[in-house]
Image (tube, rainbow, N blue to C red; front, side, top):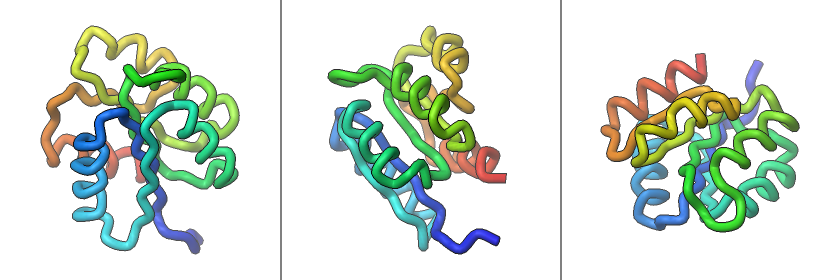
Length: 124
């Protein structure tokens, strides 16, 4: 039985993207917890500090210090049960994203319906 709230981590160096995704998540999963980070290095620290207790990490690919691809590899190595959605405006990154261990790839800009369907599929 799951006793804690569904927990998300949104990682993007663009504040507006973080805010939009956070808003969309909270609109669908009212009682959830959403953590926000602006780069992969900070996100790795957040995941480790919370002992991997995240249901979904949603990350951009291109960020300072640690990319979304590298973040995905490292998180999956430590916490393989965490689901990861990589988002990017570069559709040619889909293959690389999925090869790194991501569970889904969303091409920016994506709609609320696409995000929700992806999250629901991964949370089943």
